[in-house]
Length: 92
Ligand SMILES: [Ca+2]
Ligand SMILES: [Ca+2]
Image 1 (cartoon, rainbow, N blue to C red):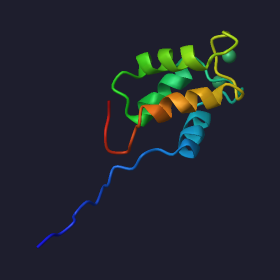
Image 2 (cartoon, rainbow, N blue to C red; image 1 turned 135 degrees about the vertical axis):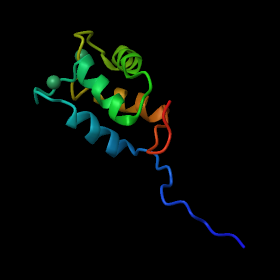
Image 3 (cartoon, protein in one colour; image 1 turned 90 degrees about the vertical axis):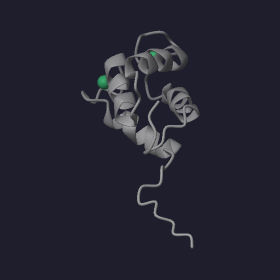
């Protein structure tokens, strides 16, 4: 007899969800994600080391090196977060 009891099936974040999460973390609503705001987003994703992820994500996405991720640069940050395969059930 097999009973599937998985009330909380780990669900991968879709890119759409990631985009919304990052935009939600733009606390001051200026359209730019600072490292602190990105860090908050990774903390919400369940990252164990959100500070490092923010640094790495910023390094990859910040094309014009102004220290913030603008809407134009957000896709690169989403790609980075997407590759890390965060799910609602696992943290790393
Ligand atoms: Ca901001
Ligand atoms: Ca930038």
